[in-house]
Amino acid sequence: GAVVSQHPSRVICKSGTSVKIECRSLDFQATTMFWYRQFPKKSLMLMATSNEGSKATYEQGVEKDKFLINHASLTLSTLTVTSAHPEDSSFYICSAREGSSGRHEQFFGPGTRLTVL
Amino acid sequence: AQKVTQAQTEISVVEKEDVTLDCVYETRDTTYYLFWYKQPPSGELVFLIRRNSFDEQNEISGRYSWNFQKSTSSFNFTITASQVVDSAVYFCALSEARGAQKLVFGQGTRLTINP
Image (cartoon, rainbow over all chains, first blue to last red; front, side):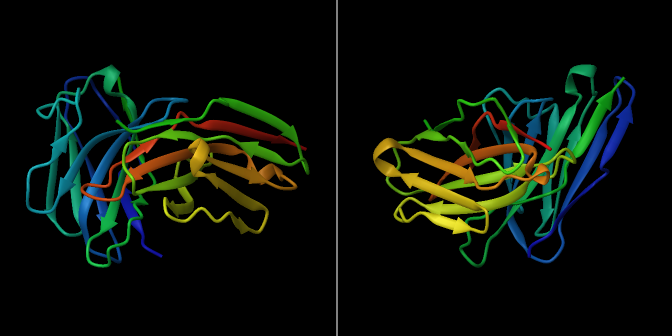
């Protein structure tokens, strides 16, 4: 099956620093990748949709200057949380969709748990 | 706008009992997809099923079964003879069939199977 990896799996950082999270599709080309955020005991909320080679589309209420998304290749998308604050602490999950086959499944990464001190 | 409602926030049953997780959705699209995902304590989402809006046949996979009722906009999930390993949070989700095909998730149901 299609595999999506995320790195790092956990990160602890100080307030004010920036953190980059990588999302990779390991055995398929992902024309579209999605970034979700999940607070404890809550559901997944879509933050943005990124298509390879173009700017990400952010959901309402998500600050694009705060959460920088880059989808530079068909196998890699990155999410950078800039000037992180404790309220940014959350579980960030990416997913990827294969573009060529017309499949509608999104394959999810294992998630990255961010803790901002 | 699309919306998914999982009214049961938590369910607790004893092992070997059958349990049904409810999912009700709202959409204006005539073509859409419905999903169920399992999220164990590790956090990784596990894909369980995808259902096309045109396919109202019920599906069974081992101890899992799904009942899709378009008339009531429901897509319920039943676990038969539950096991402790079934303990997890289960999410129902909906996506449009065209365009970005973004997933909209329900609030999730935390299922605890007690030995």
